[in-house]
Length: 135
Ligand code: HEC
Ligand code: HEC
Ligand code: HEC
Ligand code: HEC
Image (cartoon, rainbow, N blue to C red; front, top):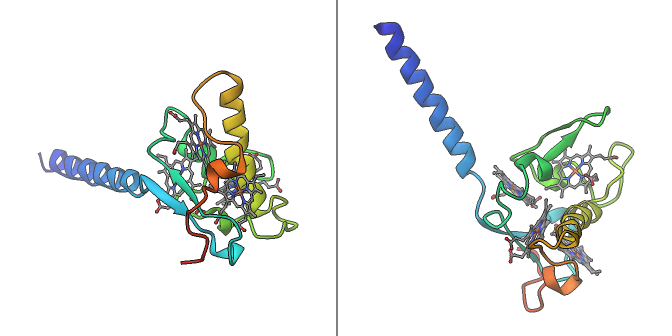
């Protein structure tokens, strides 16, 4: 009896922890990497809600790559934790390249299949009138 109760409590704790993780990402955010310094283009809005699990797994975007190429997870990290303003020996993909490649390649791919997609032109993401200054 005691054992059953303990198991139930453990299960509840795990479920709550998982729910907490799932809630950790905001629906809408403004991407503003401090590593890029003063931005020259209007800041880019990104909606997790519209990029739902139907479109991609968390780890498609929040990946890590082992030397053998296997994709791991980097949920909870910023892209700038691994991609720096300039390419490095450890990571050849600069931060701006990382964003542009990830965002635009998928939008092109979806559009190519005639499916709903996102912008590929500069002004579609860097929308005129959005703030540019670091906050
Ligand atoms: C289509 C790509 C994409 C998908 C899919 C995605 N994310 Fe994100 N997420 C981003 C980007 C881009 C940022 C901003 C990263 C940065 O500023 O360096 C971000 C930021 C975050 C952050 C930190 C910022 C915040 O306050 O929300 C968390 C936590 C997060 N994502 C969790 C998740 C989880 C959990 C999932 C799966 C349910 C997920 N993401 C799916 C692209 C994605
Ligand atoms: C934990 C570290 C880590 C984080 C965080 C991370 N990446 Fe990466 N990413 C890598 C590594 C490692 C590579 C491979 C680099 C190489 O080939 O030199 C890579 C490669 C890439 C590539 C090129 C390969 C491909 O899939 O097209 C893109 C684009 C990219 N990352 C975008 C992003 C974006 C956007 C984010 C944030 C949402 C992000 N990365 C977060 C480690 C990371
Ligand atoms: C794995 C594929 C994928 C990736 C990666 C991706 N997108 Fe999208 N994006 C989509 C799809 C599919 C839609 C269309 C969603 C719909 O209309 O249902 C979309 C829609 C959008 C839209 C229009 C809807 C809105 O939110 O106003 C914007 C803006 C956008 N994406 C920005 C971005 C940015 C910025 C990034 C990179 C940080 C990004 N996307 C990465 C697939 C992707
Ligand atoms: C699919 C969305 C998308 C499109 C299309 C796009 N960008 Fe970006 N761009 C981003 C994201 C996301 C960042 C990263 C912003 C950050 O991390 O603060 C970025 C960063 C930048 C930066 C560095 C930050 C700054 O403001 O100085 C420049 C410059 C830039 N983009 C120029 C362009 C130009 C020029 C085009 C058209 C050829 C373009 N972008 C198209 C999403 C996009």
